Length: 107
Image (cartoon, rainbow, N blue to C red; front, side, top):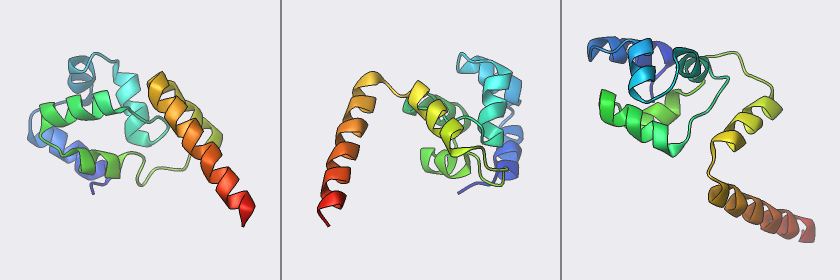
């Protein structure tokens, strides 16, 4: 897993700036910066785009998101993640969460 600084170095090593990478995936530089500092998550679509453009594995990307950053409030992290998820994924997560709650309440 990459640290935030390792991610920045890898970007530089492969010739990307944060601003250029953000534009290449169709987003703004502030959007990518929020991901780098850990106040925003990203969905599978952007993980794949960034991985394909930079050669950084999706696992390394997921490992770096927010690492070594001051923690954001849990509610803000969840809110950002929910905003990025496709509705069908969100429905599955809610269903699985309800099933888990039901199982836990039986214990």
